[in-house]
Image (cartoon, rainbow, N blue to C red; front, side, top):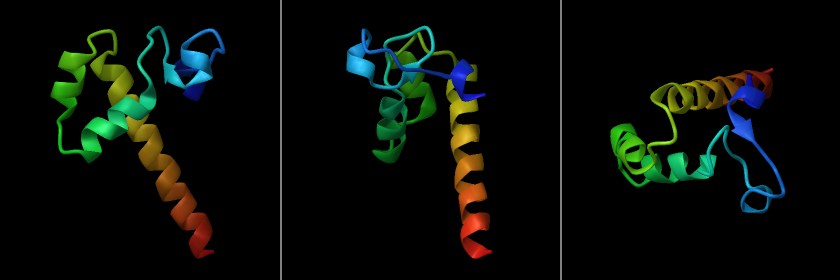
Length: 74
């Protein structure tokens, strides 16, 4: 699923992971949310990112954290 969400290319922002089809770093979404801004604010500021992309990234990140927590508790 990540290849359809995240792109890394040395020619785009020096290889920083970005949303596929954009030049928007995925880190920017997490920065917005951790500073109290909403998903809607992020999407308004970065219209090249779709709501679907952002939601799928958050869902994937959540699943990774949960899987990691389950592995850690075994």
